[in-house]
Image 1 (cartoon, rainbow, N blue to C red):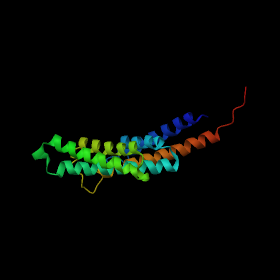
Image 2 (cartoon, rainbow, N blue to C red):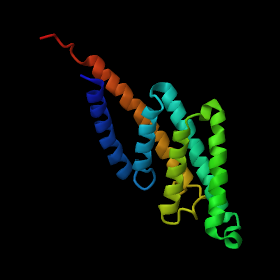
Image 3 (spheres, rainbow, N blue to C red):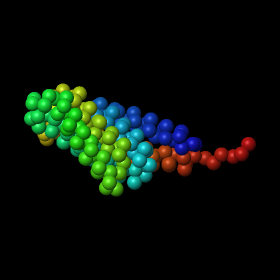
Image 4 (cartoon, rainbow, N blue to C red):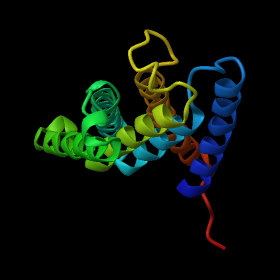
Length: 178
């Protein structure tokens, strides 16, 4: 079996199970779309243990930077005097600048993975009901908590799907030349 076929099987089966879990028994907290972003990020970061570590570290760093940016925008107080678009632009500019500078540290070198974490957190906070109001809530309603946990789950699913695909390739019968 080819690696692509094995990945199709492992990601398809695990993706179906994960979707059922996130929308069923784990419903109301974790976000399947954020898990799929991190799952893809795992492969984008090279897979294996190093890809898992790079994905989790960078996704979390991006999520934290988005959360800090959202706190500054929504509670910084300058939105009224400067105008919200100007204040939000300043906050995002500074937040992204700091986030990208983190890539100077090897643990945070996966810049795209940081951007995925940032975008997922900001998007969820801006689109969820009262997402900005729940930025400091100690629950899965907090965009930071739900996105970080969802993305860690997605990275773990990427790791498991890679291991399963490798096992499927290794267990396939050898092909005989015709």
